[in-house]
Amino acid sequence: MTASRPNQAAPDPHDDVALRVEHLSKVFGRRPKEALARIAAGASRDEAAKLGTAAVVDASFDVRRGEIFVVMGLSGSGKSTLIRMLNGLLEPTEGTVDVGGERVTGVDAKRLRGVRRSQVSMVFQHFALLPHRTVLENVAYGLEIQGVGRERRQQLARDVIRRVGLEAWETRMPSELSGGMQQRVGIARALCADTPVLLMDEAFSALDPLIRREMQEQLVELQAELGKTIVFITHDLNEAMFLGDRIAVMRDGRIVQIGSPEEILTDPANDYVAQFVQDVDRARVLTAASVMEPPAAAVPITVGPRGALKALRDAQTSTLLVTGPGRTVLGAVRDRDVMRAVQAGERELRPLVDAGVQQVDPDTSLAELPELAITSGLPLAVVGDGGRLLGVIPRVMLLAALGNVPTDTSELQVVDLPPALDARLLTQTLDATPEVHDAR
Ligand SMILES: Nc1ncnc2c1ncn2[C@@H]1O[C@H](COP(=O)(O)OP(=O)(O)O)[C@@H](O)[C@H]1O
Ligand SMILES: [Mg+2]
Image (cartoon, rainbow, N blue to C red):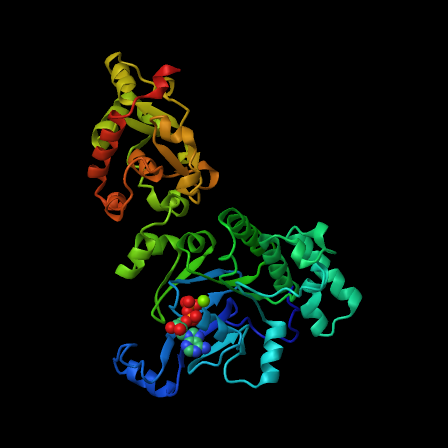
């Protein structure tokens, strides 16, 4: 959607960076520079408090093009101050911000207006819709200010109104809309500005949970469709986990960790992040790939019953995945069937194979795992391109994902245990579970 730049030389190595923040700090108060110098020399925020309130201290990060970058932290941690420096609403005490390669900090008002027009727009938690204008006029308002002609701006506004699902409401007044719909008008207004970067400060925090979830899903869809770069502020961990490609965790003005939702969840940088993370619904965030194990308990079908029995013993498990050409998953065999076949002197494994093994993509979240996989008594196969076996998800992990066993952090470590120990856990879990398959 961005106009192509003529006469552009070799691709810029920073071309995938939409927004760059370097050593950004903001102190409110009488002697901001002095306060920062104290903090840089090791003073705490409280110790520097008489000189000023250090709202943001030495924040540095890049936001990649097309990324949803979430800034998460408790109230008062400096999130709003940070985001307001990203579009020049606040001038930092120190540090720089570049958006789309254009400097935002330390520039004059005219340059700043240019950047806002072409690069970055913002959605606030409580933004005022103009009460005496229709939905359409509200959405087109930004374009009106920019001097875009009536017909053109209405055409653009209609397009984004359709995208946020409000086409039937164009001629209504804001007071006729629910809170959730008003919030969509706000998002439509920001989308209408057609800037590559969208800043959203607690944009969904005032909405009730159901509408909020719907808005989150819609935002992810819009992002995928329009390829916007989004910086999204929230104090809600679940929201951060759902939306974020990456999450920056803020505490007392500092960014204490930046990582993918999984990294934040499984490897919190410090106690603060760990505390924050404790209540999240893990199953929604952990993917099959992050909990799968190397497929030790898998054999090619050509090994026959004897080979299968040996592998069952080695892996200390009661079921074994069986693979065909290209390591595709054919199914699984159970120890008692294999034992019987070996005793009977049978040569073929194929008749023993139960094809009911569920296969999932590595990106599947644990919450989405098929129910059957959990009740079937068979391991779950994680497969990549062409159905190639990548790993196995032990049942103990599946049960944890369903909340049947405690999922505190120590339990999560199950994935890091040595394979043998895991296999024992797996066997115990299997033994303790009634086998629904026999009922068929
Ligand atoms: N305009 C201001 N003047 C003085 N202090 C401010 C101002 N804005 C924010 N603060 C202080 O900066 C800190 C961070 O606030 P804020 O960025 O609003 O945090 P958050 O958005 O994470 O709740 C708080 O201690 C707040 O009181
Ligand atoms: Mg705030």
